[in-house]
Image 1 (cartoon, helix red, strand yellow):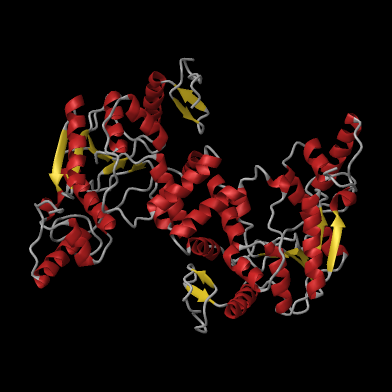
Image 2 (cartoon, helix red, strand yellow; image 1 turned 120 degrees about the vertical axis):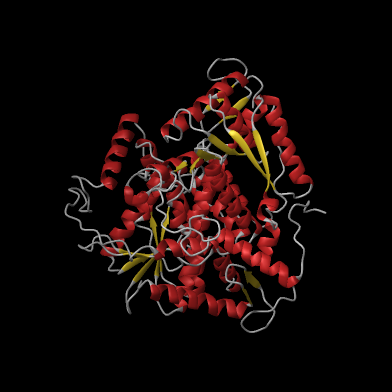
Length: 318
Length: 318
């Protein structure tokens, strides 16, 4: 950024430059621009009706904390839900980042001990079922978001996924030819017809990481900059790096890639019709038990066979 | 490459390693493997019938010289066609690389002075029509390949495009949502129904640059390592770099990306049906004149208006 560069909107000295928007902004105009952009995204994809109660997944990272703030500034009152994974200091810092945010701005935060809720740990499930940690963690969180949303009377689950995440995911799906997953990529996923799967919304779907970082800086948000220690071996950073490289040389690639993909679709994925429910927990499933309960069953059997005490409820790093 | 690494096929010391094939090869086995792989590709996509006469576009770079050699070794006798663009020393070295190859192995080479054939230079066409040099050069070469193929009695035009080129092109088309171009991406393009557009084949479509470099090294081919001085500003290197990054971290990505794309198609693009021909040159067109003749007309007018003498037939660097 050249020190003499002027804000495109108000001609004050600019603090941020976004080549993909062909825009330079000062701190005040960034704030206005950002809010408007999120408001437009929410409206365009019909994410929210007036008065709807929002449960927002908050990790403590920049995306979710920024989503928390901007949604409040737009007049919504999302309740933050954080799943504590008890992964030692990383988890402690994650919880603290969420708590500090809630305290500073007076937001409501609910913290859940995921392992205690499960009765076993996510790591034990991953080992017992020979699945990658990230896949288990993601699936389990989805399960509890749906469960809590319904049980606690929320209308939808919001997450902080941004354009960098979503475009990298789309690239990965295209690389692997995952048509099935691409069908589901949309800023909004409607609730299932029986209301069991909650509506999911991604208000930052069209906002880049660069804009989110700028917004976090303007508001002095104390976001956690670390990535989860269990995320080693994940492929998404490689797709992200490839997207970054293209964006760097051809500004606007990320956005036009996503917009043309969305433009080819008619609208959000169809609401799921669910006909069968898990005999153990009541969660929708296509077989007699849902995958959450199957995973848990196998994990408990595995712990018994190996004669291991679960670490659920304890700190995992100890 | 570890100095003690053994060839997967014969257990001799390996000279090359291809993580995407999970394969290590010595020089002899690389040669056999490479030939077989090309032969299989030609067969799978039904590129050639026995006795067909092949015109091979040769630039002097590794891809086309390797294609020239491997096709000969497989029993074909492709005639090399080189378009000399008279871009100073780069063009001189390109012609020399093709001539040395022809002389060393006894291959037939025909060199054409593209600017002299046009009566104006490619650069003049680009300026007069405000088009990128690369786009003009590609379009004009396509025109003359079709013309020469028909006129000189060849059955098809072969080019050295490799998997790195084609996967980067596919990525670029996906990024930009170019459905129209993606439809045409296939190892073979059939001749048009009237036979005016010749059959095009890409025998190295599924072969990576890494394998091509290894093959060139084994045979001591003196390939030109430079890129065209006019290619500055092209976007394809950025898509290539993004593909390289993904391939590096997730070996096999490039190949599986292409294979799943090809797998979703029924086969080669349909043969074009042409109903109208250029009033000037007879080339197929949808309007009264073909784009080659329109470009030339505009260029000649432009030269006249500006009172400039064409540089066609001369060296462009002077």
